[in-house]
Length: 100
Image (tube, rainbow, N blue to C red):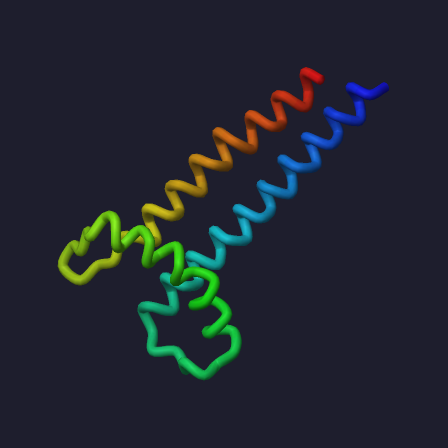
């Protein structure tokens, strides 16, 4: 009985983490698309996307100053990190929840 509750709790945590990572992945993709166009910086949605992504992108740019001919690769690095977390952390939580 208690094992079922613990397993269900871990499965729920894994699902919430998976959803949060998926949403952030799409926000990063939206930010990359916005960098190709000239969006209105006063647009509320543009401001939200910039505020949600700039701290993480800045952290990557600061530690890995990769600039390939003007191409910012920090969104690609973040997307790879998100895929890693989805495969490693989320899948591990699901596996542990099944064993409980």
